[in-house]
Image (cartoon, rainbow, N blue to C red; front, side, top):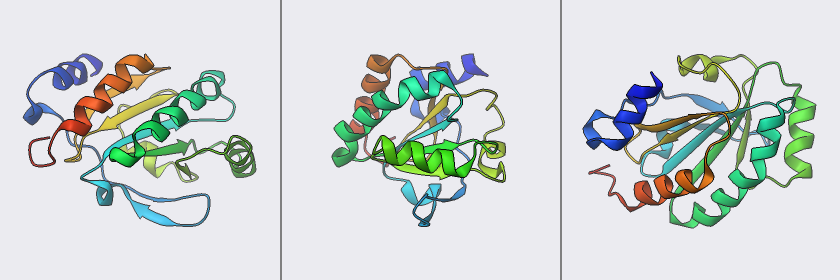
Amino acid sequence: MLALLAAAAGSGCDSRPPAPAFGYTLLDGARGRSDALQGKVLLVNFWATTCATCVREMPALADLHRKYEARGLATLAVSMRLDPPAAVADFAEQRQLPFGVVIDNTGAIARAFPDLQATPTTYVIDKRGAIARRYVGEPDFSALQALVEKLLAESPSAA
């Protein structure tokens, strides 16, 4: 599957698989739907407070979000089902995370992504709602930034 996604990211835009649509609730209680973010480039990062790699990559994700938010990047950090909500809220508050933090307490969001097997996993979703790339583990942030720039430059109708 990873090879398929890598091929899709590098080939024609029509070959990108659609991202699943899901509803979510942010730590502040605001509700949203992923499909409402079409027209933006969306990073969906699955993580856990007990995952050392997840914790290590979070500042770089925050920096990337801050750099591109004004140009249309949206980021959702989806905490896994077994992560204690109080620990997630404390982590997000202490680090002043600049993006939406979601607690997937039922596991429904994780189940919507059938190839999700480990944390951290980050999905990069283009403006039309298709998966452009999946990173398992800590991504190469220079490659991730280049991909975000490329996707932000695409028009939503041509994404």
